[in-house]
Amino acid sequence: MKKPIDFFSPNFHYITIILGGFMSIQRTITPIDNSVYIERPLASDSQINETLEKSQKSFSLWKNTSIDERINIINKFIDNLLNLKSEISKEICWQIGRPISQCGNELRGFEERSRHMVDIAKESLQNIPARKNDEFDNFIYKSPLGVIFVMAPWNYPIITATNTIIPALLAGNTMVLKHSSQTPMCAELISQAFDNTGLPEGVFQFVHTNHQACEKIISDPRVSHVVFTGSVRGGQEVKKYIGTRFINAGLELGGKDPAYVRADADVNHAVENLVDGALFNSGQSCCGIERIYVDHSIYNDFIDEFKAITEQYKLGDPSNEETNLGPVVRQSAAQFIRKQMIEAEKQGAKRLIDESKFPIAKDENCYIAPQVMVNVDHSMRFMMEETFGPAVGIMSVKDDLEAKQLMNDSPYGLTASIWTKDLDFAKAFGKDIETGTFFMNRCDYLDPALAWTGVKDTGVGCSLSVLAFDQFTRPQSFHMRKVV
Image (cartoon, rainbow, N blue to C red; front, side):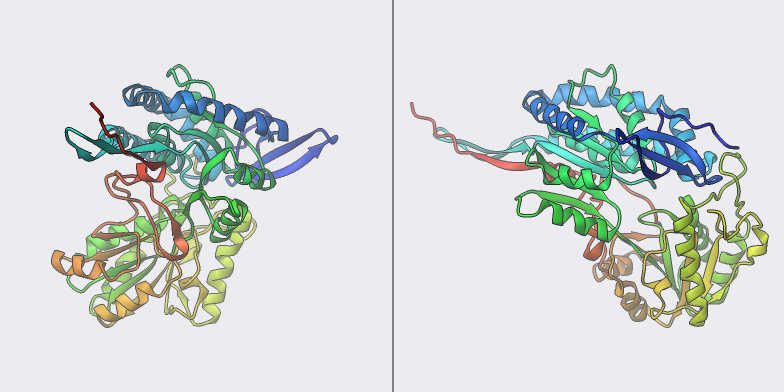
């Protein structure tokens, strides 16, 4: 099972060490067996400075490249990255522990989103006419911002990075990517996909570096915009590092996404989709389902079926094709998830799933049996704080009003879903839910034509849809008076 260490390849959870006072090394641990998977040297201060200098210098060339040429280059990049499917799937499996049978889904999502953003780029980035007559030709130009610094997360290492890369480059910006220390190889594969596309040197670059260096990069006046996906505390740190500089940041932070199953819902359909929404990627999804509210009249039938489907999952070595539930990303994450459930039990919660059916799960490893907690309430951290693991809480509710109050009783707001046959009710109900995306009879999915955004402690900013381009441009007004 163990893969030999490759000093020049990247992987999971990192530890930084100093070799002889000369070089800092990032060491990544695979959750498959907690062994060292890959090591990488971290960029020095001078290398980071050179990267930012290149990015700034290449901006003037790239922003004046025609939109047709940018689209041509990005299309080649998309094709190249799709051709790396086998390498990417292997690295996602070993770096984060996702079952190899599910790793290809990420590239399907990448292609759908990227192709859509390319398709709408020309129209979305065109000038906005203001006044045009014999005397004036006034318009608003969407001017690119400059150097974009992106800090991408490990849980969906390709699509979370490219959600920013594609629209930002199409808009005429240059980019420096710092991928999670858990998934540095994904940054290298993304960079490799830009080879032979015609992208000018310096337009896209990546760095392997630590938090201290990120602070300096964010504070650097050559950086015009920052995108970060991660914890609430991490987002707060980004804003602190920006300091008094007048630049913006796109922040996708925590989530505790709810679902409400009404009495008129198709229970079989709801259960099938909500189990997957809670357990896919071992629950390590920003928009994964973490709390479910079920109408009291169907509650018992719902949890019986939910239990039956959950216990059919196969937890094991993710490099085996038959596995459909892998380990969580690291030992510290596993300990946090277990502690949250134990604390809830002490407060009266009950585990619905027989964990003896998943013998590989042990306290000393990253494998966690899927779990459903009942008899839960909002006094428990398990129902209020992000879990980010294969565990979900289910509560019975008496009516729509109680469901609405509980769904909004959260510091987060990324997605929420309702499961019902009443479209008109769902539309009205959704307007009262504090969330970035509201689903009906679906969850844990991104439609690239819709804005991906959040409210409250989930963060600020937007990716995907026509609105994404507005995050990476600024309006520049042209007041053009013609004198004959």
